Length: 142
Ligand SMILES: [Zn+2]
Image (cartoon, rainbow, N blue to C red; front, side, top):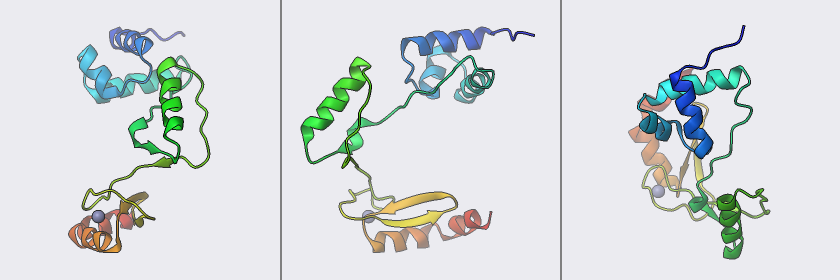
């Protein structure tokens, strides 16, 4: 039996039709239902195969490469809806999870559950570990 699209489905699809890269939060503000509700409706339409794909949503401001012209080209392609082509050697700028400063060299990495936290130096990693020790332990237990 066909599934009937409700008001929320329709409003969400209309909103996504304008810009498929919107977040659930943006859609939720626009159509005035909560973000989890939007997500639920989105996933339902995905499950039944009406929404066929998910578009990639990148924060281009975090990308860097030795040739800044390449970033310009990528941004241009995204804006124009052209196909994206990534070059080798693209870097993603990250901030230290403890001091929020930039991570210049190879980051110190701490595994928290199945997530990774990145730090600019081993002392930030150690301080973070001490500060969130209890939480990290409970996450790793699962
Ligand atoms: Zn740091």
